[in-house]
Length: 482
Image (cartoon, rainbow, N blue to C red; front, side):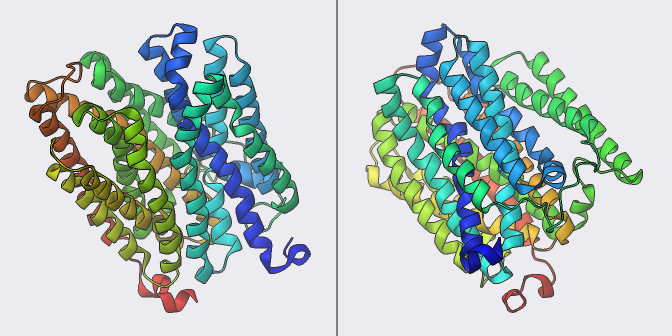
């Protein structure tokens, strides 16, 4: 491939996987704008409608663990093209579905595809680009991927108004077709390391995958039950999640000791930078997804702003995030990644803390400014975290490392949404308020402020781990990456 296309080949490869990843991320976020219309069409209650999102999240989170095995067995091209075909099939089936069960099956299929594809770009960047170009590559990739969820819901809202909820599913089709065309031109057929795929290699660790799936499902449903269900049910589900985690770790150790290929190689966590980066990724996912849920709710139900106004406030922050990622990617080629991650976490924590300065009388530009500050913080974290965590690993562990760190980030994200809901409801009850009440009040604003403080504290906790991402100087000093 390099000989055929010359030096530009690695950038063509990056664009190829970027389009597919944009499609997978768009499918995860854009469907939210169609849930009200879909609920009305199928006469669904809130709990059943929520499974459209939850089913996708569970499938995506768990399937990330299968990426290293799929790449080793089938190679980059077959694995990537297979995920795009599955995402395409999910989009068509969801758009044409006549029952809610078919819609849910389509969403699970899309989630499986999205989970497998998301660790692939980091693996390719770490292998196809020289160390001094990796930051720029991941910055350009991140800029494109971030624009998808920034613009997607706005476009999706227009499509739902014009053509109904089915049009949301069809939105991924052009992206999938473009990515398939580019995959067969630019994505190599080899497995990571340039070796031929081994179809007779190790079988997939099905027991580990089952334990991971059961644990994730129990954890997410336990958090949902804590949010709005029975405390006894929540307790049982969370105990089940803890038990599944213990069994999963024990089984992965057993697989490694017996010389078989585990689903998650626990040797990864013997590297302090990777272990600390994993902690940061988990907490960062919690804060990112939690704030993505909390900010629109805060603006609408806390400050009394309209939904369309909220969209216009958050859109500039999305564009600032995309630009920041591209710029910070270049900085990551010349400066220690742990320092960039720490800077981002500090800015993100500050933006959450500054939300306390907003009152019912505050000018809108204050809210926009704090939202932009938070997105600048995210822009510092996104391109730097994977590089700082993966660069210290042996080349043979990069596929496993990318899969594991993406899994932990998504798991944290899934928890973050429920966590913000739980803390918000708790603080509202303490202040004697409820979101069911029509009018906003200082008491409601205080409850939101305390929830933002919780997110700021989480970022401060992640900052402690970020400082420990620092490897020995020979690994991460800019002079050794040129």
